[in-house]
Length: 343
Image (cartoon, rainbow, N blue to C red; front, side, top):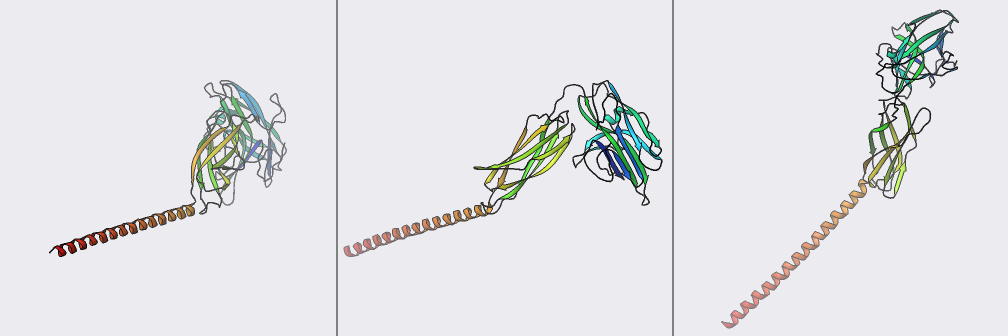
């Protein structure tokens, strides 16, 4: 059994501290607060020994029986509530579970714990059986939840504190497994430098959706390309998402040259919990990257060129008109002189 004392980390079991409905996820083993300390573990039985999680593959309409062990490590009697709850991925990428006031529709609803409450003397342990019965109409795929032990206390300040310690349940309902991640939304923001030879970073926002029925994590990169160049971000990780969940990440891509119009390409490489790699997923979007100072200079030069051309044409037109007028005046003068001579 692992130890836990006032620290937050990733792990197989789930430790949650709820203060007026705020919750967090932490490492397996022990939950401690002042003199209240207890631990949970998956019992050793036909399902395995020294298990970090409850992991099952069950066909629709079938059930599985297992046991969770709870131990009071404190110096006083300990009263705990026990229940099962559905799991979900938090904004920090960790697995959390619903609180008792939130209705479960999957593992939490399919699991029956033999007793909903425990009273343990100091040093006492209890083995609590539970049964997970999968409905006949359950859809194939991966599900997550937990068996949770809960200690609710009230503070002098009036706050209600719920300390929860549990073991994760990873369930795969038998049937066709269809792993699928998709890029549901892909946007890129880029503030181009005024001068074309100065590079600025671009920020891509990628929303990933698990559209299949299997748990999937993924590595992701974003590449921006222009004429004769490209730049790729550092790889980032999409945490393991349950079916139907989404995850949004902001990714910075450095060294972007403002070359008028760029192509941004996002790529995901999904992986199963067992490490199996799925086919890559890609999406692309166009990005304007205009070096406005250069464009302003070009526009100014073009305006000057147009103005000079127009002025030159005007001068030529005036010169031609003046020459035509001079010739006309000369002709008129010659005709007048001829008429005078004849008279």
